[in-house]
Length: 273
Image 1 (tube, one colour):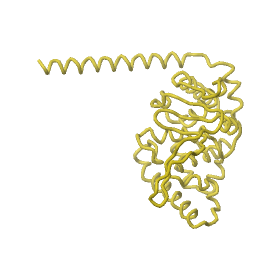
Image 2 (cartoon, helix red, strand yellow):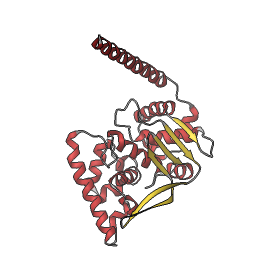
Image 3 (cartoon, rainbow, N blue to C red):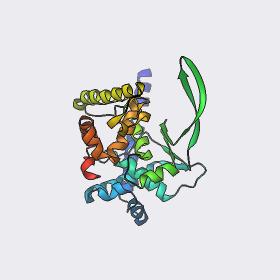
């Protein structure tokens, strides 16, 4: 009798799961069939990366933007959320997934919190074994199914082709965490894993040595000492540079550029230069 109860409960849960997946698929099909608003297209013309995409990629990313906007909750903190915020955030988030064949963009992400400017958070800092709690200003954060974006920094960087892009940075963290760990190694095919680790660690360690020795950074100025927090931060900063300074990235770090081009499937030095 107990076995029958267990089997019955298991069957019920399985049926509910199938129903959930069916309804989820239906919802996404409905979203995909929606017309792309003209006002969204007008906003996309402000993003320099969008104008460099070929027509097929533009159409693909429009579909991804609709899926993103209709499945995430945008919440303004001290600021009213508008279409420009939604479209620019969704565009750069989906640009990272353009070659990833991801029908459900960032499935574990539920909420985007948008602040007008920098946010003060409490953070523990360890110095010589002594842990202190201090307040620091941040422009963005990614954790626990939520991305925090400060709009003053995000908007100015999204509207120009340059080394810094807060939206790309935070969603690189989201990609990194898709395998359950935020460690600078996003999910990838097994055959690429060892080369990724070898090249990323080598450049990260070299930057660390230069900073610790107070040496001239030279070509590592492309990343800067802020990328040295950990491997996850290095990956996020390098993602910004890959999409915003692709030509310099390829010239100074050809092996690392190859890894990023293989991972993202985009030759940014050619496309966005």
